[in-house]
Amino acid sequence: AEQTFIMIKPDGVQRGLVGEIISRFEKKGFYLKGLKFVNVERAFAEKHYADLSAKPFFSGLVDYIISGPVVAMIWEGKNVVTTGRKIIGATNPAQSEPGTIRGDFAIDIGRNVIHGSDAVESANKEIALWFPEGAANWESSLHSWIYE
Ligand code: GTP
Ligand code: MG
Image 1: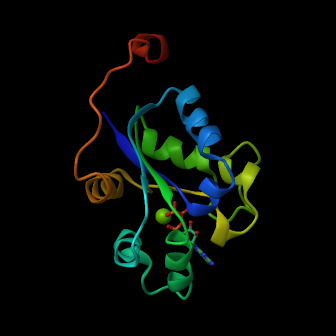
Image 2 (image 1 turned 135 degrees about the vertical axis):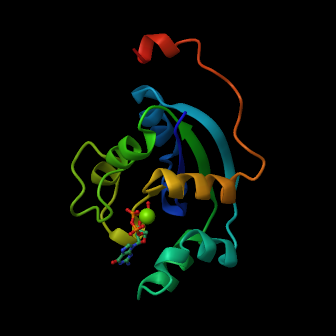
């Protein structure tokens, strides 16, 4: 089944949004298959955001991600990568629709609360980077009530 990597950034943890965010993904019908706190080191943050290393905001982005513990998660379900990005909302909270996580809980692009993989390929790469131990192995007994 398709999986994505979701990370609650340090501001989301500090602001007490962990439960709210997990709840939104759970209620949608996605399955939580990995969950842990991580104190991200600079080199690891640079690796996670390597595609953005040429951007002018890169060092500020890395400072932001290492400014406190993050919550790293694996979520699973049909189209979870694309739908997860919709649940999260546009990168810049000024453009995020109300009803999305960033639209409801964020103001500035450099404090946008949450990360979600942008494609199945990057999801698999990020899951391998953040969860070398692998995902949890469980199946929901409600599956056929959610998936046709
Ligand atoms: P992630 O889910 O965190 O990867 O965000 P995204 O995929 O919506 O955006 P992208 O991967 O392009 O950028 C990664 C992160 O860098 C964003 O979530 C922002 O926190 C930050 N970022 C992106 N663009 C800008 C910018 O123009 N200025 C600043 N200050 N930060 C930016
Ligand atoms: Mg991104």
